[in-house]
Length: 230
Image (cartoon, rainbow, N blue to C red; front, top):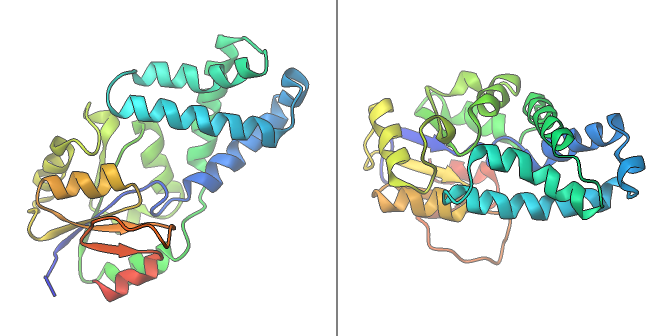
């Protein structure tokens, strides 16, 4: 078995339960701002529409076709407009409330702390994450993850995002690691697996899709399976 010294983790949906935390935050704000009265729909219908719009916007944000500020405005504004509510100022305020509330939540992917406790004595661990600077560090601090990691590399502060090779090379330089003695662990095949592969770093693809076959150094369906690799 190849000996690794440095482990690079993705954050959202790999360790920090983005989906659960996001839904909780939006549900809270939906009630606080009486959105059912404003939009005329229940939370579930709204949230389903929002998730589709947000996913599409993140796809174009990752490739640089929209800016961070455009993403901040459009994801809720576009969703509200689907229900005939046109108020961009409120949408932007709602977004900022969402980012603050969501990042303060602390739900983790099952077995996150258990596996990090297992790994910490033998490896130097870091995070490489796409996301907003104002949110990612708060997530790590509030969920008890900061203790485990030496370097936290956030794409928003650099101006380029996974799978751009520059963010991986920057993380290697900052941590004193090399591609040969490192491995990337993440749930997003393009940014995490292909990004790491492009610089010669091994990868662990963490996926819930048991039947999905993707080319990666390792594929796992539970974080506990890292014990079979590391």
